[in-house]
Amino acid sequence: PRDQSDGSPMDCLLDVASRELAANPTDKVDDGSATSEAGAAAAAAAAVAAAPAMPEASAVAAASAVPTALTSVVLARLGPHHASAIAEAAALKRREPLPMPLRLSPTAVSTFKACPQLFLFRNLWKLPEPPSAVLTKGILVHATLDEIFELPPVERRTQLHEVLRNKWRSERKKPGNRALFKSREEERQWGLECLHLLDNYAAFEDPARPPAGEPLAREAWLECQLDAGKSDTGAPSLEPLTMVGKVDRLDQLVRHRGELRYEQPEMNSADENDDDHGGSNAKVSGEAEQIVAQASNVPLAGVTIVDYKTGNAPSQKYSDAANERIRDEAFFQLRCYALLLWRKGLPSLNGRLAARLRLLYLGDADGSGATSVEEDLPTDEAEYEAVLRKVEAEVISVWREIDALVAAGDARGFRHCSRPFCFCHDARPLVFGTRDD
Image: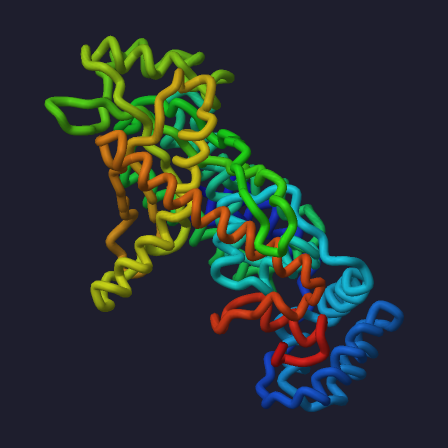
């Protein structure tokens, strides 16, 4: 791609957006290092909490007066305004009874399993979190890979970069997104990374002719109610759990000689240039199903749940037990989607259930390109039910734990994790005044 303004090679998102950023550079806050002292941390939290009432420079000076690890965490990682917003919101939430969530998503369940305290901050209290370049990259790439299927097949490959650029021009105007980068060059490198992920996708599968044909559904919402049974807190029973989730993509899968496989129908040139192909009905389309059924002359056997991942595929360098645990964690959310289809289904699928789970990793730290990791669900009905009932039991167990913690009424009961990158470690001193809760 080339920058139309001057004809120079661009290979990034930055055209009009870069010039806007150059005219309004973001402020930098230097990193720091330190040690932890609970009492001083509490004092720093109080200083930062007062930041909204003073200019940024004064807020930095007030918090910097306390030489603790919190100084660098709050001011370098979060910035004084984000830190004060978190402290202020948490102070309000701590005056209120702990709320029980109205529903859970597979992502929320995974969050609680990984870090109950992050679940408290993010899902129950909804504390403000600083914008993240990594998260924004994931949202942008996911949105692009959804929207590309709205275009005629013949245009998809050539328009991948432009669709993402257009989305970023709009997204970067949102509050917080301008502050994601310290310089124009940092934004440019981030843009190159986004486009590289799309290039990896296009090299792995042709968006004009996906291996499973046109997706049956994209960005599809699933919902069902799960019976939670008797409460662990002594109440007669828990309210039924409403579970919701949004699937990136549902592909068709057929049975051929006793094996499940993708089936790509033959298309002529007229099909590939049909302006209606993958158009307004592409979100949930029965047309793709009919094409494949006619072309393959075999019954459709189920669907593949596809989940895009903008990171790298998990390494298999650990022990067998560790590798299995990593794999289970990676596929947990997709098994939850399979559970939702099994319990309630999606009308457009005509009763078909998930037969295969597919994680499509677009990152390539080793330069090898995108990687697809798949898991086939059992074809035996009893075994299939046993797998999904195990997932359901795990979800209900999390629902019971949340219910017990909320009933106890102590926010500190939501324990933090040991993952160094988790937001809980940055927010905890601002919420509880110590790094140890």
